[in-house]
Image (cartoon, rainbow, N blue to C red):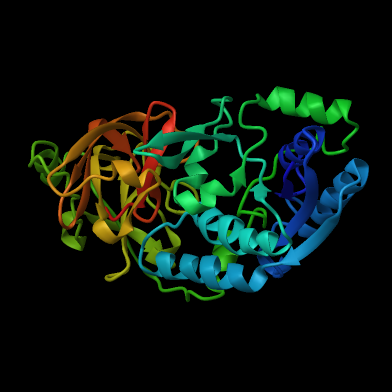
Length: 388
């Protein structure tokens, strides 16, 4: 049997992951990652780290396994927090949970676990790992979780083969209801604990307060774009290469001010503080260079929809490196551009400059900085940061 370090988060999913590994006869060690020290920006009632750490410790005690807290806050700040600041400053909306898995859980944390003599690192993700042999070489496959409502494969879309090789996902074949039942039967006090939300192993963060630590307010104009603007019509009937409309101040009407374009994201409705319109306003684009926020009335404003997206070549990542496209090649896939989104049909077209992704049907709120992840069947093959 193997020695397995489980990333105990203080929630029910990782608790049951540890339980199942122990029942399978493995030597299990529980480890809690402390990634955060700044309580000023954390909504403490939602996910106080000290309570989660205590819950993780109580689970370890119940199971009779060793437990320790590892402080990864320095690495988290350098690799995740600084990345978040730089992305928001550039007018993009980062996904720290995807990066946390690639940079923290399955890198820094995994390396610490291997130093303890671990054979594997396990987490409570709702996803599965399978293996196949291609030309005599073992290939690891990242598969969707069996519980389609909880599938978390998207959050692991940036992991590498060598990381998957050492990873275990014990609850990937289970439904959430089964996980809670197993925890209850085992007497784990996390059995009915509410699922945490927010940053990876941090909890909910007051984003404006968080961003204002590094990004200064910078008042600018909010511009409303009419739904019948000719640029939208030209884009809808344009070239086969999906390219975005770049809005300018002259394209619409100034209807108010904002505290800084870097504080907003595509598709955002709340926090605009501009009213008096027949329908709610939504952010359709931001321009941090000129400090402009472009808005449209109504959830179905046509500028909220895009025919595709683009990923720069250096940002294209293949989990299945053996299936990676070369320039001039294409592939039909199912795509996600956000967590818990139903995958939709798309086509990848690989070029020298990057990957053009064409949607079978226009998609709403394609957000630069987020990740597009592509699947064939249940298998997640690769991903990339959305450039436009």
